[in-house]
Image (tube, rainbow, N blue to C red):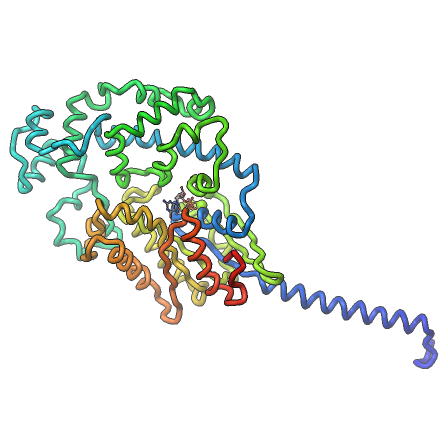
Length: 448
Ligand SMILES: Nc1nc2c(ncn2[C@@H]2O[C@H](COP(=O)(O)OP(=O)(O)OP(=O)(O)O)[C@@H](O)[C@H]2O)c(=O)[nH]1
Ligand SMILES: [Mg+2]
């Protein structure tokens, strides 16, 4: 046994070395634990098609990550699929809404003229608002989606539940009635004299259409999209389920369907792929901090996958398509999309796990919202809206409706109006969000 004084120089060196290693390990542990705590976890939540994956794409672009060749190829296939789906949807909607090809909504469609010239089977009563409901219920009953859409129900609106508040009625005006009269007179869906281009599209099997890209298809789509009846049908797209990228892709289908086509960043931002798996993306924002972003599927069937990601969340960006106020849900046609958004937001915002989680709301798709306001009054679906149908008043109304859902007075809700497919608009919003999330230290890093 050696006493303290008898320690050999080798022994001393080994002890010193061992101490040094222990010290080093402690330093590494501290650094590791510091690294761990610098992961900022952010969830992108919201109903289907609200724009979550589009915001994630923008974050990737802003971070300089771009898209890999495999991703680009995947988006090219998605764009072809989006085009096919949009054409199929519109063809079906033309029959469902009873609109003939070539229909011109801007023509003189005075109801009495329409009766006299196009619909001899109908009684020749002059158009009069007081007889409107009788005429509609006798001749066009299927245009009225449900009993509570009739005009006499206005007095009842204050008693309606949240779900009933967002009732989306089918168009019921002289133009839609004139379209239907002509459609019926031409033989309904069975005997319509479809133009040859439409016949090509109707006859194309989905797979053949998608894979072979038959040379006549792009020309047929060009003709189809230019058709005034199809354009009128498109203007009523809130009455059925149509992708928001429809006009972007169909207006230049020839380019997108060409075999040499390579999608640009904008094409990829516009492409729609429904999310069915939760994805995790990490963005290094500085030497110590990583932003970990989770993108989830927003359709009802996808929401059961959300809960496992709720632990230790620093912030939630909740997306709401503000343009969806006059649309119904894809998964439940009796539910207004905006009402669905509000219910979903309330359940997330007031979840006990998110009592002190920063809640950032993106009221998204303001570009579509602005366009819609001109023809679709907010008050038709939200009778408590009594303002002017302007962007300022409409956005203030929905912003207030969202804010008042928060039941935690100590928690702030940050609301932004976004256009997720516009890189410069969303970048400036994300920069502001950056300062909320990470503080000034992480500003000017070109990422959140
Ligand atoms: N015009 C316009 N289109 C948008 C905007 N934001 C998203 N879109 C489009 O809306 C469609 C749906 O967007 P996604 O990002 O896939 O929606 P999501 O919330 O991820 O949908 P799920 O994955 O089903 O939950 C895509 O075609 C987008 O290009 C916007 O601000 N304006
Ligand atoms: Mg998605």
